[in-house]
Image 1 (cartoon, rainbow, N blue to C red):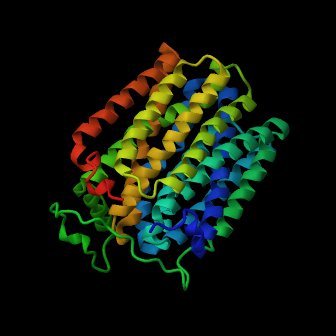
Image 2: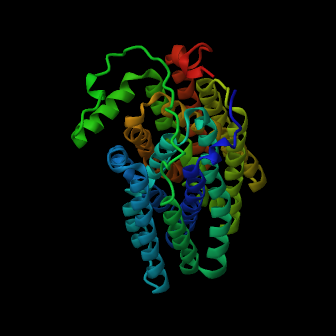
Length: 428
């Protein structure tokens, strides 16, 4: 019998991690919205906006390495160190703002530094959940955990836009810095505690795909050997390969439309101010939050691989319709739908990866998953170049149609592993 969808809160570590991830995600979202609007207003250039957005994701290249670090020194320790760094960088931006010395160049430079760490936050927090929550609660826990990101896009967007509009960037960054500090303190309470040790996460029986014997990790093992073993593990499992290809695709063609380009859409397409931008971001996030809650509540027995593919296709259809909207109300409606389907897709990806991956490899495999985000800055930069030439609607439609076509290709290519009801990836 499946446990209650709120059962993960019985685990002490999860009771600390959920609010820690929540306040950290709020701060991350506030920063992205505030600084994106600042760069667009100060430069008046969609290309500079996309350069700033791209700067936040350079760290995806080192995500597998940070995953190895998490596997070696502990996921909690790694997460605390990363969040301390976010706090220091936010305090630095706040200082520049109050001194009147802030410029788009400084914002992009600090964004590049922060971008070395921030993309890995999701990977490390997911690995920490998988190591502290019993396997029969993992699907529900990942859905609940996703609500931290989705609610952040609502609260972070509205609070960030409101504070920025009312009191300026410096005051807004006081709130950002304090949220990061609270996140660090709460993260210190996570980790396995006596009485909370979870049962082993069941790994589906999979055929021997020629996996190297090195995965029975000796101790000590070199850093690079561990990284290589994580990559080899991903490549040896068709479901993992398909999940990584899908993650790469949506970061290239879907997330740029609903994340980095929203300031441009608000200002140039719908002709609204930063409050209107907040409403657009909150609409997408509201759909994502409801999607996360529905997934946590009802997807415990769902065929996850099928959910992943079907919701990804629906996500692209919603973005295609969003691209045609000329009023902010219509845009908000289809962003809401896109956010809901995005949650189904991305939570299914995360749960599939964590179910298949062995405990000692979780950090580095989730790091490889975050490596797929590296396509997002390229998608942003290409979109900025295209928008200047063919406009937003044509660019967004091209992205959505290409993404939809590639989801169908994945469904055909991995049909036996992802779509068959009797496939292990669809086991309930």
